[in-house]
Length: 474
Image 1 (cartoon, rainbow, N blue to C red):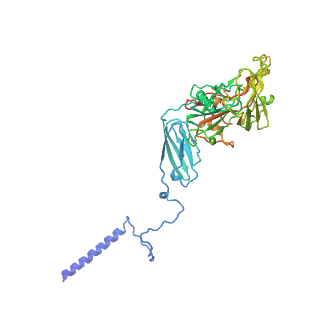
Image 2 (cartoon, rainbow, N blue to C red):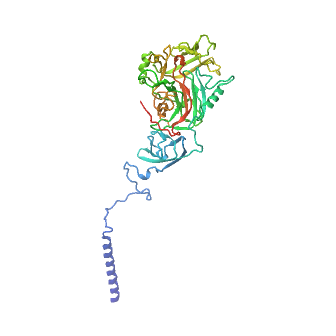
């Protein structure tokens, strides 16, 4: 009996020790004991569903879209369309920016649009940052060399139609039976490549349309291309006069191949805003032209119609060496415009072929565009003894933005694509261009020199040729 009591007593003592150990462990620093108030019983609809966190008004990082680098591959001189990344699907305000590049010869256009355009002249890796709201992503464009090295020169002529002029049917030469297609082909043969020959656009409105085999990059802060002509400066004339000589400015239109059909479409053209496309008052020769009674008005909605001449037979006794008696037909080609003006183009003794495009079957030709101010001024009074008639025409140069307006080696003959404007006169953000149209911008007769006639020769991508010319803006 006593042995049983001892066993029971020992078991009770052991329980007490175990309880003391449990209490000591529970009161240690590692896990303090917290007494919770009693919670009344509540009905739980779904015991497996965890309690939802309260709405704090901020987005849980876990709910944000995954931001990953976007990679593109393209070739040099090739337009690339950049779509906004999918993680910007619900964001309209997107901005693009280039943060690193292996070269300055690139362009990204439409920086504040959901779709941007990118083109580069040099290969390498271009890193772009794209942001929208609180999201920032990275786009990496890997640019490789093209399969075929592009040509820096004109690659194709799409259209050619000169207005009547003294070099028409000669530059390039018309042959009996030639059609419009034949003359476009000849213009192509004369203009394509490095060793191009000069073609004429004739009088006001005459034009040529051509393209390159690649996109000429619109590099920010630089001029991008040049269209050669036959402009030159005069060493004599009015003392202290601005640059002038034989400057016959052609208005320039540009386009890039939006729909990638490899030809210029009517809705793709933009105007290169030259220095006098809206007003000539800033031209350094403007006051001289006013003094001489020249028409200094700019007409942006000009239309001119030329009528086929009734005769090609000389009806005046012309004298080649007499600047006052050079005309062989005084009232040769009748013209009229949409401003109630009219007159005749003169046929001179120096060029006897027809001045009206011989391949044209219609009896009249109509042209539309910008008519620039008259820049040809007789400065013979400032050159005593030049000739008995004191005739010496100086065709003054416009400051910038035209073809055949400055000598080909002069920086002012180079064109910046960033001068492009739309039909409303607003500046446009073009990534580059594929096509060019040039038309004669001046309607003027310059004595025995004949009409102002824009001439066009070689076209050049300045970036491919390694030429760097800074741009200008008014």
